[in-house]
Length: 380
Image 1: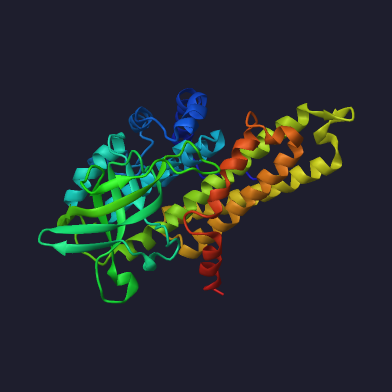
Image 2: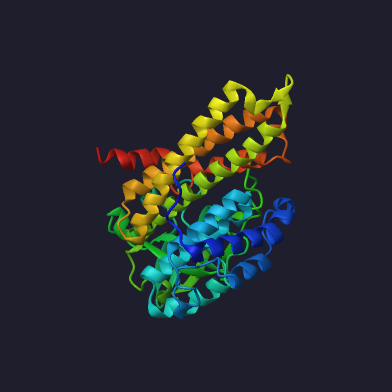
């Protein structure tokens, strides 16, 4: 298929470093992390030492100051290795983006260096028990009392919820009735009085990913912890970062597709039925050929979206299309490849079974795919 031209020599070297870290420090222990429903904090510190956490953060704030292609590599390799417990790295990186692009100088200096090193783990609290993709309908509210904002509400599906030291909370801070103008992002420390966390949420997949509910009861936050210093900017800040978040989901999805295809090719070459390898049956070859072509098309689109992102030209509609199409392709690839494994496809010792459990949420988080269709439809 078409060779990828997006990366340069230093990107390839970094990919080998990431791949080695995952193979040695993560893959052998991932099953244990699934039982514990979290990744140990020392893995975050190791990733921080390798520069994997907030790669595009400038060196002045503790990062490497590198382009988003390095972040893309981390996402691709995590998906390839199917170590879904590390999906929280992407959430952490998104939080760093909010701080870097919208934070005050004091907020950047306080939070970005420990986030780069892995000493501070970040989470974003958007979704509520009764509110999903419609962020303007949230009920979590922060009222002003002197020099503090007092926060009350509940959030759910919080990646990094157990370990988080910093929480970017989406909250109502105004009463104008104009929806988006009443929303702010508030930086809450993980040890704040009045903040409590649920036990890890039980999920059908991504069981090593630390996911909890967060509860805010009269949590007092210094007024200067409103992201950027001015209330009412939260919806705009969220929308500006969503293009990267959704492209990240597309990147992980297409890398997962490729990993599943490669493992299935190996399986069908080595497994025989009626005296010949599965791949020698025309039905198997044609199905695998179709998948290979679709993955190549998806990869080309994702790489082009990354080029546009680097040029600061990636539109919300393009990132929505990439997220929708690639995440749905991931489902088709996993389903077809599991079928080619027969009964073994249902066994967790085979990569396709782990992808089967972990991939499905890609069509939901970052905005459900029907919301992506609505965003695309607005351009018709």
